Length: 150
Image (cartoon, rainbow, N blue to C red):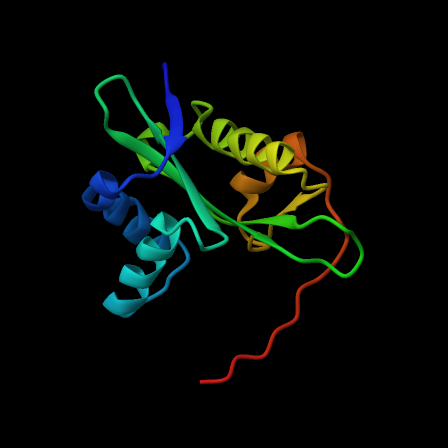
């Protein structure tokens, strides 16, 4: 299936919202305040923000997947590193190279910016994604800890 990877645009909002909701449902996020979704989309479109996004579309222009990524400082390197925060492919498009193409697009953006590293997290139960990630990156061996303040 031919796909095109391109930056997210304001006109993509309705189709992006469907993919974003699918991503949230996949990770069993029961509700996310609408203002957070609105702010996330606005940040992606704001050139002053470090948040960026690519979408994958088919020949008809339908969106098949999304990836959000953020450049940030790092205490171990001079150049900013790239955190691939969200990656989601529509159910009907899985196994067709969409996820790989989106990751490769982030790799290209990182190289263009001079970033020495792209990294991301996935849930330990997401074995399907891990089978892809094992082909396009290496496991760091680190375990994430966090504490939420609500």
